[in-house]
Image (cartoon, rainbow, N blue to C red; front, side, top):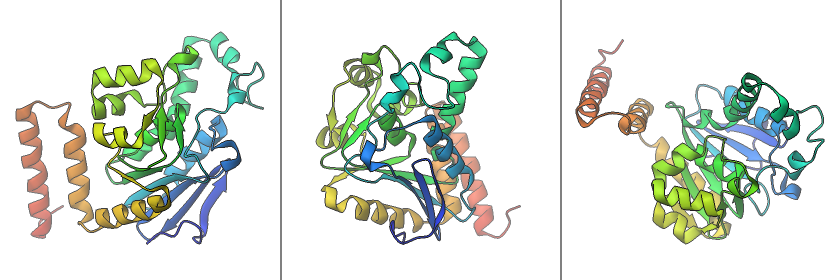
Length: 266
């Protein structure tokens, strides 16, 4: 099973470390002094982490060092200068619609690969998960949270919107009305509520967070990979299919599994 501290990194750059042990990869945010605040460089490193996963990986654990999972976008983003070598918010606003769309799409890539059907991703979340940090936790399939977790979507209070892929999973998890209330008010969602409304799969004492994520990854690895991949694809697509379409998708998936188990697959 993965040991977060002692595994040789596949790479480590710009506040992100990727380690792999057998079928489990761990992506760690490594800037605890800034509460793992996010930058475009960090987003590119997260995108690279997804592209660097060996084919043997079945489960990815996402975690943050220190007291906070991620306190959101680095405040330097809100200065006129922005980050060195990166367009500031003002530069982005002055660009063409196409350029602005392309830049945001590039940033979103860091948040998209976690839901690949061949992987199950687990966010182990402690302390602050604010804005971009909240959206990064939402990018994962499952969330294990510490009892000190504080989720909040603060973009609206800054005159912005959540644009790092967080709105779709948030609505899927908690429903439209509650998602609107959480985003529009920017209030904190603590561990008990997060578990109750479906944001968190499990809440544990902070000292047990890493162990709980490892235990969940072990449970996920117990089933055959192909069955988990087919099941995840069925569940992810269920909301977009009619009842009859979902029945047909189940039949097709089960047919593939039966043929595979009988040694008759392609």
